Length: 192
Image 1 (spheres, one colour):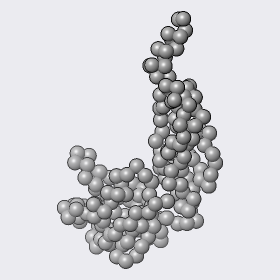
Image 2 (image 1 turned 30 degrees about the vertical axis):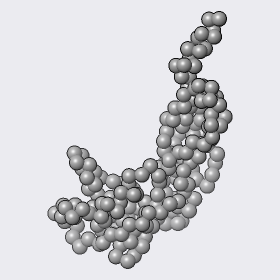
Image 3 (image 1 turned 60 degrees about the horizontal axis):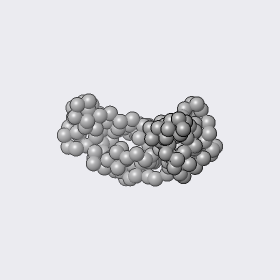
Image 4 (image 1 turned 90 degrees about the vertical axis):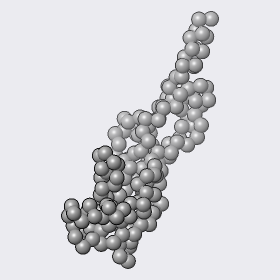
């Protein structure tokens, strides 16, 4: 799994006034939990952009005053009007404990149904995956090489790996539907 490095500094005061001052300086208040104790720190909002505004799933290595910790982003809070980042929650990783993350889906192959003029419809873009940090995949690959027109690929059709997908097995990931052009071609062929 790809890891993004950020650095932060411990906060002396915790409260609304302190958090407002941090945001004025271009920093976001943050908390790191999951270890022996919670750590309240501040991080530059610009340093977090690579970790937040990406379709990929990433681990984050946080350097807080010289102490490096591997974590994942667990929660983000944004201002409802201005969309400014207000607060970030990080969960410290423990190699012996399972975590749950949203992992993007990568479609692999070419569908014969799409070649015939069908329309590819991707219902899910990410899956909830539970595993140990060492086994967490960067992406979940879904092969569409056998999808004909009218075919679909569900969560239960995934190949089992070192991780567990917590989505319902009946959830459709991708399907190939009939396009208008294909429907019209079938109607014309049926009239002859």
